[in-house]
Image (cartoon, rainbow over all chains, first blue to last red; front, side):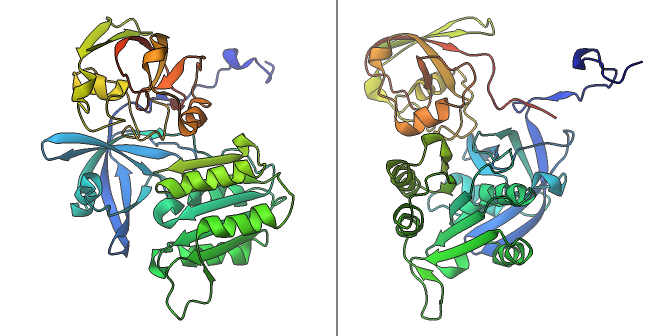
Length: 256
Length: 118
């Protein structure tokens, strides 16, 4: 027998199809409080076989709140290579019924979800310098994307521009530092809008820094951008970069 | 008053919803008065994995008639539709397309890009 059978005739059994639509359940296995208003929930699916996802995708949680079921998306902050447990990272949103419900849950509680979903993903090795821009918990989908990018050969720079109001809102700092020490082609800049007097890093907004570094500093328009955050600043960054000459499809974003 | 005709590529029976756009929102997901809002508010399901926040393509619908009765696409909606399977010139996201008056006919496609094999 030839070992070059056409795919359709292969004797290797195909993996069963898992549809993102199929409702699944997970147990909260661990909770990490990054701050009083940001935490990670580590979810272990109970019923479904190993869930595969692409860096950047999200889960759609079905949350029973006040007699109705809310559908709320939460980006997966863990790396697909990490195993079966899925980390979601979220903020306590003022008046946000979904996040208040999730913050009320403890270890052992169950949540229902569908997914993975979403097309804000990094699947292929970077084909150009990659700039990731995140605000606060917007780092969640960016984190596995960076891991995927760093797992490649390092031909292009991988840069993170990470902003927040206050220093404590910059998450995963030890890990980011570790990545910088191990990957010479990875850089991370943190920028705060309201730093304390002891902060020695950058001050200002993400959009100011992005304009300075990636619009005014040179004429290179071959970079790829991945942006995640909350609200209009994400769209302002998109418009800034596309308006400066970057290709539309080279500026990907997720606005929560 | 307005009327929304819904057909399904899966062959499910068609649905028709008559509603008063002035009464929107009909529930809490998607833009008030959007196709998603009208459908969910009248007991007709439409996938919306991101909660109707214009962050995925699961509420992709194809408008067959009445495009002139819908709000204009935003750049964000177009960016997402770019990645929707089976994109057509009259594709819209149900969570963003707001119906003003008149009659609109849509088809709900069979698949989304988010289906996974694992």
